[in-house]
Image (cartoon, rainbow, N blue to C red):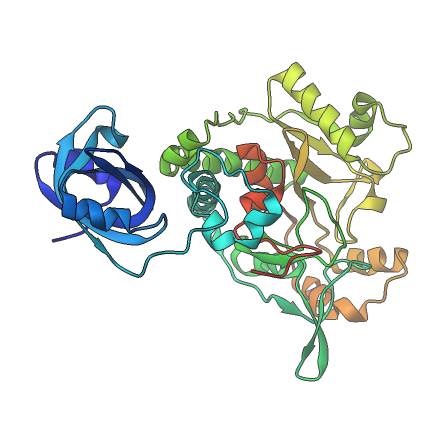
Length: 428
């Protein structure tokens, strides 16, 4: 008999089916026992009245893997409006050792460090699993939106010979006796692939050896990178980003509606045109000094409130960051060379995306490195490609875990990460 998932049971009323999953909860009453079985799609209530079956259920601790064969019976108070009656129950493994927290409760009461220490079982909780389902749907929407716009997915090296940005902290490793580093970004490679496909994207891990110990930083995270050629300036890139976000959220609604409901979320709308302010105006709105070189988290929160109050938007572009705070490959604003054709996108008062227009002329790269007293040699393989003709181009990168954490209202990005890697954590 083919196994049926819990979400399919309402269509099988009156038939005998086989389900399998984990013992989520047992309620042993005097005349009846209720067994709640959890699978990847939800919960199934099993009603046990037979004494022999009850004895089997009594001996099964929570999280034991079981198979149940029974009749699908309508019951409006049961999950999905149906339950299994007249069941047989068979363990598919030994009795489980219960985890150090109750997975059947509506919320995990264990501290986050305890959850992370026991991530393989903590992630089984519906709220933790829901965040990961939303992440998967968001990535699917990212790919689908860009595929529909003739982007090509690429896969670039994660072990590199030099850092992407000068002065950055990188993880060093030994590459057959030569120094190498874990890639902190696919930036160089995705630019070079614009010279092949014009429009490219990548979904992959990036590594930052910055000793941050905050609720918004990870040492390894998933980056959703995009680069496109033949742009007029950074505004073309912002338009693609807007459409990409809309596609991601639409796919979350379509693929992960159950997870959205589990978490009680209202997904944000993406305005047809996301409001944008220049960096200098952003400083004024945030009440920051006019000579401030960057936005602090408190400034971002203030700007997020302003975008919500003034424009009804959860999203806000801040454009024109000072060139001094942007990587050497950033294209300056032709009208104000001290400022860049770069941007950040804030989502509910948190920096989510960095992007902009890049330099595309070989001579400009040589000048930019010289202006920063940077040698060309470490970047030779990258810079040399611009001698062979590259179109005006630009791109952006979205931090997946940060996006999902903000979307689900998590206080810590680790709540939206299956197995986080940070300053203190290398296991499990």
